[in-house]
Image (cartoon, rainbow, N blue to C red; front, side, top):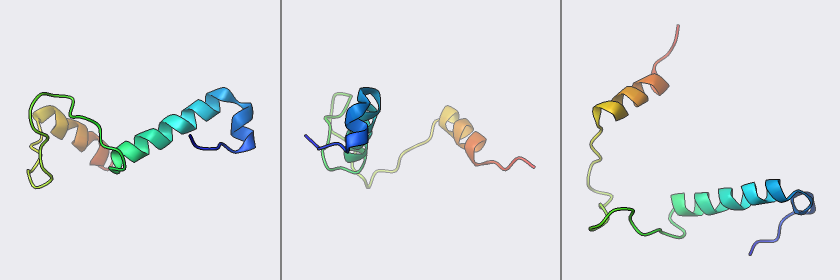
Length: 67
């Protein structure tokens, strides 16, 4: 387990948040891979991800510029 800085060791809520953040970033960047959440083979990086209409709408909301 990682050694936490003293200020984090004093606050268990903040320490738990930082440990969860470290675990999330490791999973995100592939240091520790999780099993796929669905049955079947994991999609390869070369397969393009197809956006659903809901994905496109959410992406448009975050990328449009409000003027």
